Image 1 (cartoon, rainbow, N blue to C red):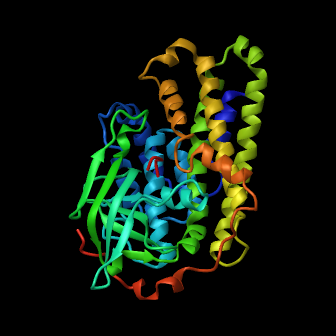
Image 2 (cartoon, one colour):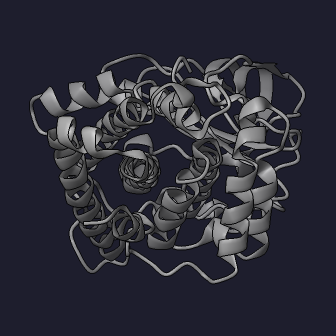
Image 3 (cartoon, rainbow, N blue to C red):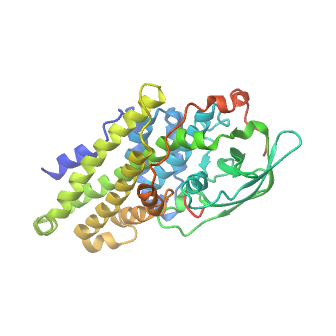
Length: 389
């Protein structure tokens, strides 16, 4: 099989057809990937362009396809899409309207859900603590050790804990009184993602900004999009690295690295098929036409896709050689992007822990819309991790 044919096959997942107008946006994202990596360009330009086309709130199959396409050019941009679209999902899952501008990308959304999933797995405690206000609002204090998309004007969605088993999902404005953001810089391939530590000191959360107090149901409702968009991103990066390795390979590389090429190529095809099947099942489940995807399936395909991205970028480095070692090369950037995946929440350790845990991972409960019926028509409020999430 020629490298040209392989590249053609890996250019998309086959989940959904991206609108023709997306091609120019994705090309622009690729053209400025190096500048984003150096900190000389704003990756949000591409997401804003996608927002103008209504794609930031698109259905799951199209968003996974888009995350894959972006990651083939710039994983940092795909990662920021994941954070924003995940937070869109949090609103859709609870029936709470989006903050103005979030649908078109003029306002960024940040996902701070890592502590909620870590607590579920027994790997930590939610660090944000709530107290009740006299007017039905909450007051929240604590630290989110890592969050991304922390652009001026952004809204952050995060879990909070109260006394005993009380838990809630809230949103708050990045620029609200009592919120302090300490930017994280010098990050490997991620300086363009507006990441930082978020400190809250007695931040008032109006009742309309409490998305739900049924955390178990919420987690299970959003688990599939949270993990599947990440998986599309991982496969996009892996596919781009494999394409580059095949294009650069000479006769000696094909001979000496034949088994690595074979395993990586077969692995990508197998995981692509599994991702497509899982996204289709998750979409049918969301519509009430199928059972929800077993959490173990979601975790497995996410973990294996991230591991493949690591192997594929290392294979590319072996084939490309010294010129790929230059910091400004696409090969170097992809290797640094892949180095992020083991620490992106859920981390590789977290995922392996889940797969090894007994009994089986939790199953998903029913629709959340009844969990907070008074919030379905609420307007956005006026208040105003150790793992990347």
